[in-house]
View (cartoon, rainbow, N blue to C red):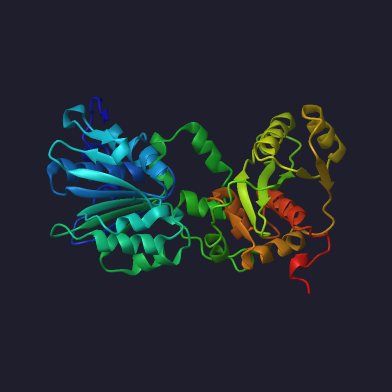
Amino acid sequence: MLLKNQNFIVPWEKIARPNQIAPPGNWNVWMILAGRGFGKTRSAAETIRQWAVSGRYRRIALIANTIQEARQVMVEGESGLLSISDESEKLMFLPSRRLLQWPNDAVATLYGAEHYEQLRGPQFDAAWIDEFAKFQHPRETFEQLSFSLRLGKNPKIILTTTPRPIQFIKDLIQREDVVTVRGTSMENVDNLSPTFLKQLEFLRGTRLEAQEIYAEIVEENRNSLWSWKDIENCYRTPPHFLANVVIGVDPALSSGENSDETGIIAVGMDGAGKAYVLDDLSICAAPEVWAKRVVEAYHRYYARLAVIEANAGGELLVNLLKSMDSTMKLRTVYAHTSKISRAEPVVILYQKKMAFHARQFHELEMQMATYEPRSKSPDRLDALVWAMRELFQINEHSLMPAIFVA
């Protein structure tokens, strides 16, 4: 049992921006669609805190993508409920019971959307849903929660998320009982670190900037290979151990301020011929740094092979990796066709439910859904494609995986 012990300094109403305060009116859902760093978490946490301390709401659900994220962000995070509460409020956190408890007997219970069925039995009068666009089953989670909001005269939901083009989010925006507040990262620039702001500069003009910074719903790109639907339906837990694991590497030879990332993707195949993206370890770093990461991934996932695109400096890259671990099995591959042509057979694997992701890999999935021929080189995507082609033994000129050829 943890007891909050911190001095509360400034009332939230005196420092919050107008669009961070709960809106007036008779609404059921307050949806904050805002970019990273806007202050979504703080806005929701402060409102939940006020509701609970005042006794206005007494049975509250806190729902994140996973239980771990609910605890790390909504409860213990820098803007979480424990961090913003005054020590005089004597807010207690009971991790074993997934429970926050105030002295007036108001309680908040933590849930992970991965197990949204757990919402079937309990009853609530309020809820906070965080990073809703990350959920694998957003509609089902929201509907199950709605059935559980059976207490009080005016149950309410606070929904905070960086938007993605999910149909259910667009459906919510159209509902009369939903108040949608939009905000950008730049509104909170005074409270963001210089490092974070510098990172934003590299996103200018990209779809990632529109979605993650300016909170725009990036619609389906008809010119991209992957659809959002293919990606959103590709999550599946892999078997505990996969005997056939490949590390795909798309290397960058420099590590300066404007250098590309080195794509490092771990992919494994089960006994039924299904492939799983296990990890995205991509990094912008000097060759000796990313090479060390490749070696570590090779052993962590008991890989049988590392596949490295070697159009530039191939022999040097192999020698570098071999100098770090002479036991590694390496294969160099060369790009003789376009990125689109190389990726098309891998797209078919996703469409045919032969390729899955063990969890959400945000940066990789953004490249998958937005890459166009004139876009910046998609290093994570390239590494994914090389690894998948190796697993399914797709040769350079294949239009589709051999398993689909009669």
